[in-house]
Length: 150
Image 1: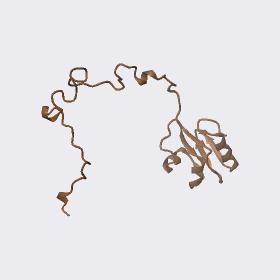
Image 2: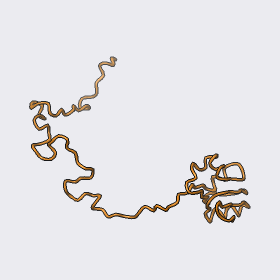
Image 3: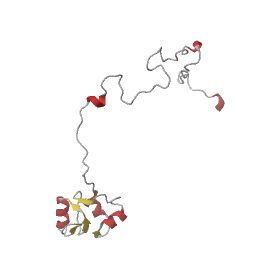
Image 4: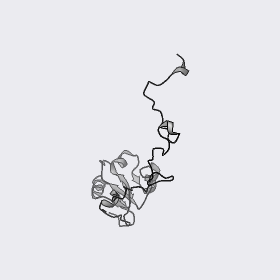
């Protein structure tokens, strides 16, 4: 078998439409742009979303909602992940080192997803009700940063 003789199957490769290459090509003179009009000239481009003068879709649809500029974003940690790790005390620094959270954002919140079977001490900015209950049932403590201890 000669590699230089390999060709794709007949009909697989379509020849490129060469526009503006003379009248004999069938795509000469106006180069498939038609005669006159907005689209025929050089440098023609339309704004994104332009629909030929019809009211564009992004203006036909109603506006919805708003962006809350006061929203706080928390780094979330589930109790199930704390259960799997070694150690009994989890501070924000240890959570960062262990890779439980990547960034603190506006604080760390512990959620009650998962099962907790051992006594642990967790330090965070916020706790969900279920997380507090599970930590206290296991005999551990939940220390809130910036608030009184619960």
